[in-house]
Picture (cartoon, one colour):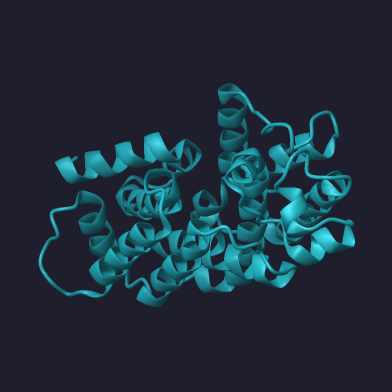
Length: 281
């Protein structure tokens, strides 16, 4: 491996270990491209964690937008150079990255998520787009057939991730639970992020879990048709199913802390889906 490839791979291993493991099930000649996509995603998803003010965060996202749009020489940033090489080699649409960066601006502020439709749009531009881009790397001929399935998968995966991050987001004053779901649960964004979240908090969380499960079921209904070539792009959904199962069991609310899966179980779930795929439903 080159130094750049090593740096990119290590960035994914450190920043998104589950996607790192899933990429290892891809053919060896596809892994570097997948790592570049996943390193980019981990980088922009963590901007708020590293840059605590919104305006410098926007500047960082704009830097990525400019780098992707440019046709200039190497930037000297290993993650950016690897991503640009992947985009060029696989003919990936730059608009998908631009939309992903635009969606991530929402992360930098404390504005509440307005509606379920807005949440699904956010998930579509982030997690679902990443799955579809990975699919295009793995098998560009088959990937377009499964764009809708990638949308469902991305919504399930992203919503589950937001549920896992609920305690962190609430401490920050962020509310990714849509305002219309909160209103139906008898709550509001302001109440949800304060104190114990109010009497409607548990109902709102239950509605979010149900919404994520709805998208997961829709994905699973079509997942048996996935060709083996595309399977690595969708592998993290094996963990999504397990996380949602733990949340839905009611033994521990996401409000009180994130559901946990042991490293052994995570590896087993990924291995099982990598080798067997998803059964017909």
